[in-house]
Structures are given as C-alpha cells and as structure tokens.
Image (tube, rainbow, N blue to C red):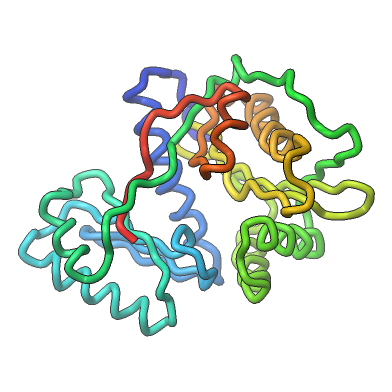
Amino acid sequence: MDDVLTDLSSESLVTAIWENAFAWWRYLGSSPKAEYHDSPELSWLLTGIPTPSMNTVVLKQGDPGRAGAVIERTLGHFRSRGVTKCSWWMGSGAEPAVLAPHLEARGLPYREGAPGMAVDLLKLNEDLPVPARLAIEQVQNVETLRTWAHAACEGLGLPISSVQSGIDLFAGLGCELPVRNYLGVMEGKPLATSQLFLGAGVAGIYVVSTISEARRQGIGTAMTLAPLRDARSMGYRVGILHSSPMGVGMYRRLGFREYCRMSHHR
C-alpha cells in the first residue's frame, strides 16, 4: 500500500485527484497490451479503446523551442496506430501558456473537463437506497472480466468492438491490486461495473457504468460504494473520481465535493 493521504486540505485533494489519474494511466501502460512512452517532455498511453480517456498524453516540463516538434511527432505516432480520439493533459511543470497554442494549432482545442471530486471515507453517506437484489462481485478471472468488459462498453456507450481490447488490456494487469474491478448482476443479468485504483495515496473510482435500461434504480450508487468501502477497510481515507454530468448528483449525495475541473485538450 502506498502512503495513505491524510491531509484533507483543498490543495492536497486537488493534487491527489490529478496524481491518481496520472498514476492510473501509468499503471494501464504496464499492461502488455498497452503502449506506453515516458520522456522528460511527455508521457503517453495508447490502449486501442476508442475513447479519449484511454489514449492520453501528459505534457511535462520541456524545452519550449521543441514543443511543437514533440507534439507533432506524438500526433504522428498516434495516427500511425489508427488513434484519432485522444486527450492531452498538463502535468506537473508544464506551462499551459507555452504549450496550449501548439495544441490548438494542431486541432486540439481546450475543453473544460469533468468535475474532479473527493470524499472523506470516514464521512461517506451510506444511507442511500440501493437494490437489495443487486449482487456485486469482484472480477477474479478472465471469463468474468469478459462479462465486465461487455457491460462496461454497453454502459459507457462504447462500440462492441472495444470489448476485446478492454479484456486484453486488463487481463494483462491481472486481478490483483492496485486495480480491482467490480461487476453488478441482478437476476443473472450483468448490469453495471466499477473499478478501484489505489494510487497517490487515495482510492480512485473509475469505469462506473450502468446499462441504459437499468438506470435510476440506485445501481450506480451501489457500484460506487462497494470499492469505496473496500478501500476504507484497507486504511484509505480519501476517495476521488472524475464525474460525468449524469453522475454529479449521485456523487454529491454520497458526500463527494468538487475540488477542480479535469480540463484538457482533445
């Protein structure tokens, strides 16, 4: 277990929200089915899953005179892999005033991102209605991972062709921490997913999804609570996530507060 964050100041939580995301991408990049590059100027992840959050670039401190060439070379590599949907983020030491014009000139405009949210796990609101018939299981083998990937793609609106890429990516990481996947099943039907990632001293929640016909029943709440409770039992104090517009109200009811915006270029 990494050093658990106990500093609950706003500044510390903002840093943890960002650093957990960067650590998540680095960890995904350790899968044999991912492509990952790290240099003093930037790091990038390619997964083959056609969504910007799974094909990312984190810009770092570098030579401003080389920024344009480095960005162009990276874009060329992404294109050579058939990746057209990607996101570019400003990491520690990056200078947005210097780098943003290079990105915008290459068709990567600035986007105000999802709310970056955090909750004190000792103050988590657990008195919310959830379906009694929902069974939540941890993914511990490739067969269950296949079911999880199908449900995640359906719930997130990703093409069915992405399922195998998701299976390959996460199977390459195994079923041990720092990542743990959760599958929600009701009456034998897989309905929902979530994922726990332990990094930067906090518990990150990712891949929260519910298939369309099962929404507004408290399933997303249950799928979020399960990994947070597990993290708390392991001694973690803070949970973080990046909310979709659909999920903000639910996360606030759980006790999450917004601390930043995950703004980037896309």
